[in-house]
Picture 1 (cartoon, rainbow, N blue to C red):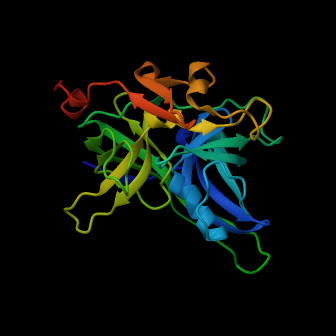
Picture 2 (cartoon, one colour):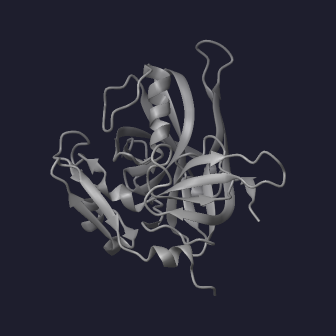
Picture 3 (cartoon, rainbow, N blue to C red):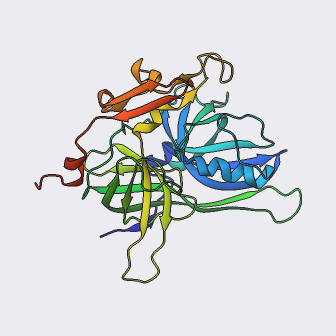
Amino acid sequence: MPEFKETEFSQPINQVVMPLIAVRNGADEYASGSAFLIGRGWAVTAYHVVEDFAERYDGVRLRSGSTDISFEMLGYLALDGGKRILPLKVLRAWRAEPLDIAVLALGVPQEWPDDHIWKIPVIDLLPPPVGASIVGFGFANGKIEKNGPGDPATLTIAPSTSTGTVLEIHHRLRDSSRLPFPCFRTNARFDGGMSGGPVLNNQTGRVCGVICSSLPATTDDEEHVSYASTLWPLLATLVDASATTVNGATPYPLAKLYENGTLEAAHLAAISITESPNGTYVPSARYDAQRWDNPPSV
């Protein structure tokens, strides 16, 4: 039975998942969406969260990899059981169209403790099978308030955990306009602000998706209709960060960071990345879709 509950900041998941806040000129703060770590200095979110910020501040859709924006993005991780909240600045965002996933390069501030141990979840590039029990996490219904001009901003968020079952897998895409990418449907409840948060397979404990969409139930006996992006197409995202810069390196597919061990993921051998004549990269996944749709009963 699906469940939805608020989660204490003291829970370890808050060392992995963070709310995203945008700010312009040190003011005009706005909270929207969640992100989660995939490595030291690397995170992912839903791309529509980044677009939400760009449209709010600049009135335009953000180009993939663009730095031509008038605002900053920040994520906040809770450490020491929620006693310390430390910021991570988003230095760059990349997307491989038409995915609703953005790869983020994060700046680590000097005030971060030298002995901090990064909590990096295990990523599963393949989708969970139909019938799998999943759990999603994100920061629901975030808002920023001020008592008056010049007053400090107060952020209100609700770290939330939602459980459900995988009901359907769209191995290539669900449709050609709204969800034109690999994803899966679940009856878990994903509230506003949870977009970009991770979805975990309860059986394996691995992150298997990114929260991207939800249609709330209209009656008490109706289920939510929610979607999460499958992760394997993420590897074709072109990034141009290096060990010394987050802007200016020769673009390369994110897959290279998994191949050289900088980032880690399960089922890496099942994913192929092919370069097309126009310089983009096309991902493909090798697995038995029929078995995923009709897993053997235990």
